Amino acid sequence: MTQEPVGGMTPIDESQALVELGKACLSVIGPDWSEVVLQYAAVADHESAELLRRASDGSSSSVEVPEGALEEARRLRNGMYKQDTGTWFSMRYTITPPGSYGVDFGYDGEPGFAAPVPPAAFAQDLERFPRSEEHTPEWLGRVLARAQGGGPLRD
Image (spheres, rainbow, N blue to C red):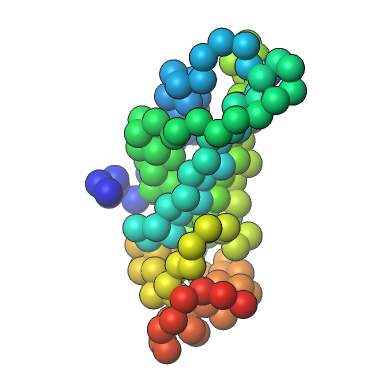
Protein backbone atom coordinates (compact mmCIF):
# COMPACT_ATOMS: atom_id res chain seq x y z
CA MET A 1 0.00 0.00 0.00
CA THR A 2 1.57 3.30 -1.08
CA GLN A 3 1.51 6.01 1.56
CA GLU A 4 0.51 9.43 0.33
CA PRO A 5 1.61 12.58 2.12
CA VAL A 6 -0.36 13.12 5.33
CA GLY A 7 -2.76 16.08 5.45
CA GLY A 8 -2.78 19.11 3.24
CA MET A 9 -5.78 18.23 1.07
CA THR A 10 -7.75 21.36 0.20
CA PRO A 11 -11.54 21.33 -0.10
CA ILE A 12 -11.11 21.44 -3.89
CA ASP A 13 -8.71 18.45 -3.76
CA GLU A 14 -11.20 16.60 -1.55
CA SER A 15 -14.08 17.32 -3.93
CA GLN A 16 -12.05 16.15 -6.93
CA ALA A 17 -11.01 12.96 -5.12
CA LEU A 18 -14.64 12.23 -4.22
CA VAL A 19 -15.67 12.65 -7.86
CA GLU A 20 -12.87 10.30 -8.95
CA LEU A 21 -13.97 7.83 -6.28
CA GLY A 22 -17.48 7.87 -7.72
CA LYS A 23 -16.22 7.37 -11.27
CA ALA A 24 -14.14 4.38 -10.16
CA CYS A 25 -17.13 2.81 -8.39
CA LEU A 26 -19.49 3.39 -11.32
CA SER A 27 -16.98 1.88 -13.76
CA VAL A 28 -17.91 -1.61 -12.50
CA ILE A 29 -21.63 -1.16 -11.84
CA GLY A 30 -23.32 -1.50 -15.23
CA PRO A 31 -26.78 -0.22 -16.22
CA ASP A 32 -30.08 -0.15 -14.33
CA TRP A 33 -29.00 0.86 -10.85
CA SER A 34 -30.81 2.97 -8.28
CA GLU A 35 -28.06 3.34 -5.67
CA VAL A 36 -24.41 2.43 -5.18
CA VAL A 37 -22.86 2.33 -1.71
CA LEU A 38 -19.18 1.99 -0.88
CA GLN A 39 -18.36 1.15 2.73
CA TYR A 40 -14.67 1.60 3.51
CA ALA A 41 -12.72 1.33 6.76
CA ALA A 42 -8.98 1.54 7.42
CA VAL A 43 -6.52 1.30 10.29
CA ALA A 44 -2.80 1.30 9.47
CA ASP A 45 -2.32 -1.39 6.78
CA HIS A 46 -5.69 -3.04 7.46
CA GLU A 47 -8.63 -2.08 5.28
CA SER A 48 -12.11 -3.31 4.53
CA ALA A 49 -14.20 -2.32 1.53
CA GLU A 50 -17.58 -3.38 0.20
CA LEU A 51 -19.37 -2.07 -2.87
CA LEU A 52 -23.11 -2.65 -3.01
CA ARG A 53 -25.24 -2.12 -6.13
CA ARG A 54 -28.99 -1.67 -5.74
CA ALA A 55 -30.95 -2.28 -8.93
CA SER A 56 -34.09 -0.42 -9.98
CA ASP A 57 -36.16 -3.51 -9.06
CA GLY A 58 -34.94 -3.28 -5.45
CA SER A 59 -32.52 -6.21 -5.58
CA SER A 60 -28.98 -5.78 -4.25
CA SER A 61 -25.67 -7.37 -5.11
CA SER A 62 -22.07 -6.98 -4.01
CA VAL A 63 -19.58 -5.91 -6.65
CA GLU A 64 -15.81 -6.22 -6.47
CA VAL A 65 -14.33 -2.91 -5.38
CA PRO A 66 -12.09 -1.58 -8.17
CA GLU A 67 -8.49 -0.74 -7.28
CA GLY A 68 -9.05 2.85 -8.41
CA ALA A 69 -11.73 3.29 -5.73
CA LEU A 70 -9.41 1.87 -3.06
CA GLU A 71 -6.64 4.23 -4.17
CA GLU A 72 -8.95 7.26 -3.94
CA ALA A 73 -10.24 6.19 -0.51
CA ARG A 74 -6.65 5.85 0.74
CA ARG A 75 -5.75 9.23 -0.76
CA LEU A 76 -8.74 10.85 0.94
CA ARG A 77 -7.94 9.31 4.31
CA ASN A 78 -4.33 10.45 4.12
CA GLY A 79 -5.08 13.89 2.72
CA MET A 80 -7.93 14.72 5.10
CA TYR A 81 -5.74 14.36 8.20
CA LYS A 82 -5.91 17.41 10.46
CA GLN A 83 -3.46 18.09 13.28
CA ASP A 84 -4.89 17.14 16.70
CA THR A 85 -8.15 15.84 15.16
CA GLY A 86 -6.61 12.94 13.23
CA THR A 87 -8.33 11.39 10.23
CA TRP A 88 -11.37 9.25 9.72
CA PHE A 89 -11.57 5.49 10.28
CA SER A 90 -14.58 4.76 8.08
CA MET A 91 -16.45 6.20 5.14
CA ARG A 92 -19.85 5.56 3.59
CA TYR A 93 -20.06 6.90 0.05
CA THR A 94 -23.49 6.78 -1.64
CA ILE A 95 -24.23 7.49 -5.31
CA THR A 96 -27.71 8.00 -6.74
CA PRO A 97 -28.74 8.67 -10.35
CA PRO A 98 -27.80 10.57 -12.35
CA GLY A 99 -24.51 10.68 -10.44
CA SER A 100 -25.14 12.64 -7.27
CA TYR A 101 -23.18 11.55 -4.22
CA GLY A 102 -23.21 11.89 -0.47
CA VAL A 103 -20.49 10.91 1.96
CA ASP A 104 -20.25 10.33 5.69
CA PHE A 105 -16.86 10.10 7.40
CA GLY A 106 -16.51 8.32 10.74
CA TYR A 107 -13.82 10.10 12.76
CA ASP A 108 -14.84 8.81 16.17
CA GLY A 109 -16.77 5.55 15.69
CA GLU A 110 -15.03 2.21 15.95
CA PRO A 111 -14.45 0.86 12.43
CA GLY A 112 -16.00 -2.47 11.53
CA PHE A 113 -13.81 -5.23 10.18
CA ALA A 114 -14.79 -8.82 9.35
CA ALA A 115 -11.56 -10.15 10.89
CA PRO A 116 -9.97 -8.99 14.14
CA VAL A 117 -7.46 -6.17 13.82
CA PRO A 118 -4.49 -6.31 16.21
CA PRO A 119 -4.41 -3.46 18.74
CA ALA A 120 -0.85 -2.68 17.57
CA ALA A 121 -2.33 -1.61 14.22
CA PHE A 122 -4.33 1.11 15.99
CA ALA A 123 -1.13 2.28 17.68
CA GLN A 124 0.61 2.41 14.27
CA ASP A 125 -2.34 4.33 12.85
CA LEU A 126 -2.12 6.84 15.69
CA GLU A 127 1.60 7.32 14.99
CA ARG A 128 0.82 8.13 11.37
CA PHE A 129 -2.27 10.22 12.15
CA PRO A 130 -1.71 11.72 15.63
CA ARG A 131 -4.71 12.91 17.65
CA SER A 132 -4.87 15.00 20.77
CA GLU A 133 -6.30 13.30 23.85
CA GLU A 134 -9.41 15.43 23.42
CA HIS A 135 -10.00 13.85 19.97
CA THR A 136 -9.21 10.26 21.02
CA PRO A 137 -12.46 8.33 21.44
CA GLU A 138 -12.85 6.18 24.55
CA TRP A 139 -12.90 2.93 22.56
CA LEU A 140 -9.59 3.89 20.90
CA GLY A 141 -8.01 4.57 24.28
CA ARG A 142 -9.02 1.06 25.43
CA VAL A 143 -7.60 -0.51 22.27
CA LEU A 144 -4.34 1.42 22.61
CA ALA A 145 -4.04 0.23 26.22
CA ARG A 146 -4.44 -3.35 24.94
CA ALA A 147 -1.72 -2.72 22.33
CA GLN A 148 0.78 -2.85 25.16
CA GLY A 149 -0.23 -6.48 25.85
CA GLY A 150 -0.98 -7.58 22.26
CA GLY A 151 -3.88 -9.78 21.17
CA PRO A 152 -6.73 -9.26 18.68
CA LEU A 153 -9.39 -6.58 19.00
CA ARG A 154 -12.53 -8.06 20.52
CA ASP A 155 -14.60 -6.55 23.34
